Image (cartoon, rainbow, N blue to C red; front, side, top):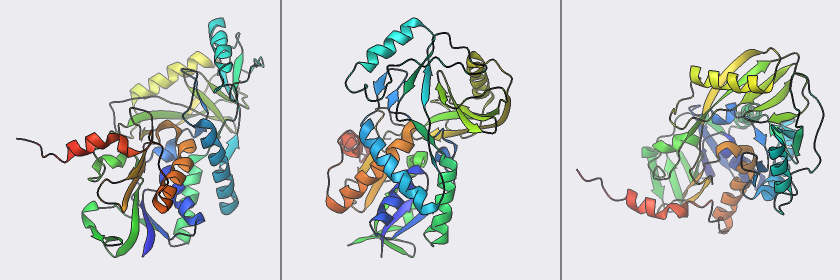
Length: 357
């Protein structure tokens, strides 16, 4: 009998897989490649919500766990995924500068916001009001991470590429039977696919579509991530990742002309040089209205668990929430009530009432 059957191999799934393996547990990961948000994500990590100048929930704890987690995976897989890089917030006015300094005086934000203006001039970017630097930032190459980790799982006979059908689950006294697989626990880490999961579809997962570009801009010599209405992330060889849009209505991964025009307009507000679109892609982020993840154990079936709702900050949240869920299962450690799916207990009870004709 396996310790864990993990459904989904995006950031949430591989984060839990790695935590379980590190603790000498046996696992098997199933995935059918239907969800793409981890592969197409921007991959940025940033402890500050720059739109509102507020701290990301549990930012310092997440950063500490994240750095240890990716360092260990890099050593294990002999590949570089985590790239430290400053994030500069371009100011458009003196008022924005003043708001920055006011935020940097707050106790919870002081560790993350530099009080020294960055006046460096970058080619093809007008910045008369300079930049503010966010500390402890960078990006994770999520596509490379997900693909490399999947190769590792396949090489060690820990991966099956197939769709998971919940109707085949049989509950045993000490776990579950799924087809010819027995496991003590199932971890559902399906991203936006959770909406089709009969055990957890009562949870208020509201996917948010994001579209991004890879552009080629030889005259844009950036060695930092610039964040304004979009982010511009240097990838090397004159290539830059640019994004992202937010669409709460379209739940497909298909790039759109509307998204393309929105990104083009925003890019042209920031850079003055010519550029070429190399790739245009999209994905549906697994987001929740209260901006907190969905972590926990089913109310009735104690061998079934969920790890989802990582939203736009999956590279920071994934390792921390995977560890939280693991210790909850193995040691009974409580889950932070802001992340625990128990906060939706009333929705669960309502889901049990049959629809009236």
